[in-house]
Amino acid sequence: MQIVSSLLTLQSATIEDPRTLDALNDCQCRMRAIALVHQSLYRSTDLASVDLREYILSLTNTVMSAYGSEAKRIDVKIDVEDVAMGLDTVIPCGMIINELLTNSLKSAFPEGREGEIGIGLHRTKDDAGYELLFRDNGVGLPADLDIFRTRTLGLQLVTSLVERQLNGEVQVKREGGTEFLIRFREVEYH
Image 1 (cartoon, rainbow, N blue to C red):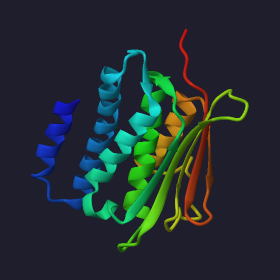
Image 2: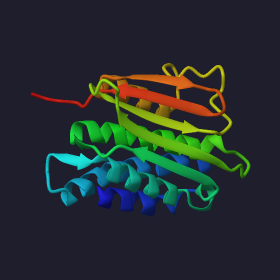
Image 3: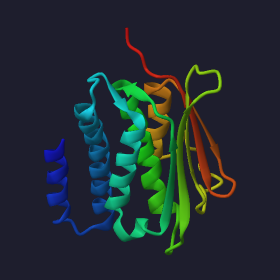
């Protein structure tokens, strides 16, 4: 995956169209999110699961680094419970966080605006599943945007991963920025 990411970097140097370059950069961020899962797995003593807190910290740092000076004006707060999960759960969680973080960095804080992004993941009170909370205090999603019927690839990925990969549900709040609350259970295959 590192090779594919490097090829995307080389290719992006030859592209002049901003929309094409943006799409290529988004693909590269997605590849890095998946590659980080594998790196975390190789560092783990348990080859069947990944420390989600460590992974989310690495993923967030990687995405923030990719946005360079734009990201420096955004404060990211991470509150993730110490939990180890299998790959079938970690990969969709990582992709969801990658998409939401990228979307916030690109759209929530226009014209040099400063702001805050929060990422939290905790067990539910009944200990039967998990809640992933992603919020920003940016300009918010447009009032007429239906995240379940959008044409943007990032939000399509988020809803698809939540519903089809994690068998979860997503709720969106639009007051004082944007908040995604995602409830799911760890994916288990027998």
